[in-house]
Image (cartoon, rainbow, N blue to C red; front, top):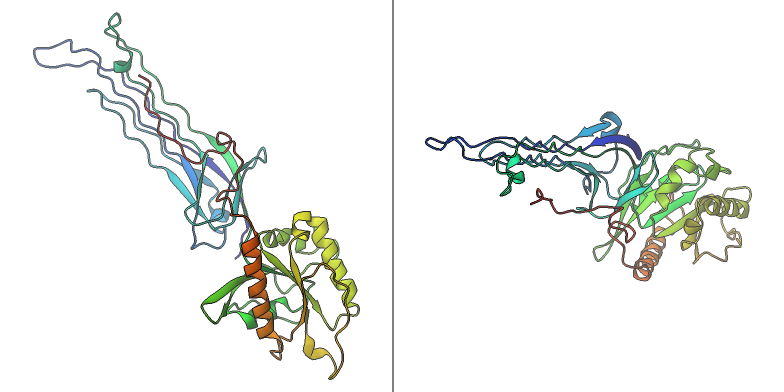
Length: 356
């Protein structure tokens, strides 16, 4: 089951309380205050895991809690700090505060992680309050409460090429013949109910990733069909491939409709470089010319037949060069896609010891 959205509640651990204790030694009944500090509560992190491809785990477990720190003890013993809790998610996951909608972080590379709930600091023991004029303090501090919030995890697949087309345009079939992916294929619309990824291999150890999303229909940007839910998965692609079947009644109208839906959903997505792929070439009568489509923004137009295998090698080489050009042109990615305000989006922090 492919799950690309989940809401979970995360609770960091409360810090341990400081101890109020006085030393008791043989022959030294008034050894002074020796209450230790409490330990730090566990924090909650979200980390990118290259071995995951879905948020399915968070469909069944929606509450994640870190343990609290141990209380301080006598003999100035500091309580043990609790272990942090890490939520593994697939690369391409965006984390938002579910209540405010604020962006907390974005994980693009394995090992990237974002702090979503900070553990509470341990309280000070009475040994910390001793001064020359206050030599027998009984004061101690309780531990700080850990942060608690509800976060929304949204997965946007990371691929080089995104296949865009109407239902039954031949996207799944094309993906199955140019890669090792085995998406569901049938002769009725909306066979694809979830995105599929395939790795296209070429000679010379070259490869790129292709994403096939469910078919887009008119009004997809308004929530009709399945397009709105899955259009987010082509946002991260470097280039787009618009599939227009040659058996369509009006191929030009199909292409224009797809471009309209993409633009209505996102101007940034509309501005991505794209190629026009005419699918189902084998359905044209022998000797028939390809239709002349008006696609001034497309970098090129290719005609292929997944069933007959016509034009597939040319398509793969073209997409490879297309992707390489896009990779060279794009700026170096920000690992977490965050603004400069580090306080608003805490990624790492130094463990604060008790105040002196």
